[in-house]
Image (cartoon, rainbow, N blue to C red; front, side, top):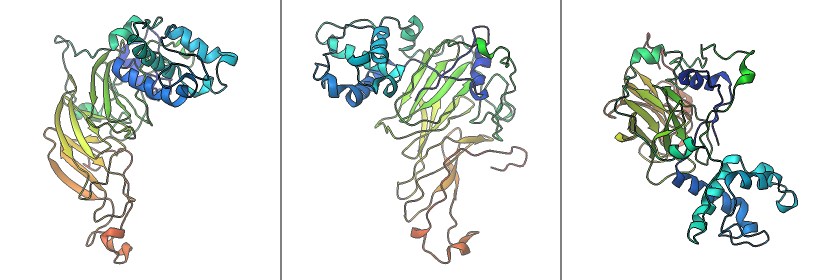
Length: 366
């Protein structure tokens, strides 16, 4: 999946970023070269190798290695190849897929001394391929409880912007009169996999949860990659609907049931807390919310019969120490226990918490 961002050069970066939820088509990015090559390899093996050979040496279709086309030409061939290409080609691969395949083919070509440059790729995207830390002179503004409760209109600090999940931007720079003038400023292709993610925006930096337990921090003005976090033993099926941010930390829930706190400036892991429960079968498919410095998240995968239940869990935002957990299915002696008519815990399945919650800071209720 790709997120995509489109906005005019006259808009401020923060205002443009906030247009994410106003329905303006938003895509973001340019991936690290290594990640793009890996995506290209997977796409090539799935969609191209059957005709062009496992290593691009040719078969039913012509050899593609050594590659003699730049990205623009390669895309034109895929889209307008006519009889040269199978009929599925124009819809089965996105533009980002084609560029990734080109990057992969160049790695194969390089071993034969015949790699070609990816002509037509913007210089900014080439710069973005290497993670760049925030410049020392850039002042970091910690995200406070007051900011989460009442976000600046130019920022997007919660999954649905506000703690009560309103999901509406008060910005009014984009109107029905000028929306036709929006244009693409930059793009960033996310990792392959299912995704329903919503970026966070703070200090003109976009924080994006990509499939497979991956987080990218991007400069909202240029699309330049500031840092990348990739979890060891990647899970291509893991997807996160959101991240959370508090003080100087970005919080990622992982597919293997951990909550990870990342330094918002560098992406370094500050703490990692396992939540999964006794049988290790539960997981996360959405990120947490932050309530007065407490990180709260709900587990999924609860349809599996086990000697445990799924939970809504709270951990300390600074240390990762677990504070409490509440079962999403009534256990013996808890309210609602009688509805299970004496069934043992093994057969009390269900109660998935698969989307982020909301919080009322006045009543202190999640």
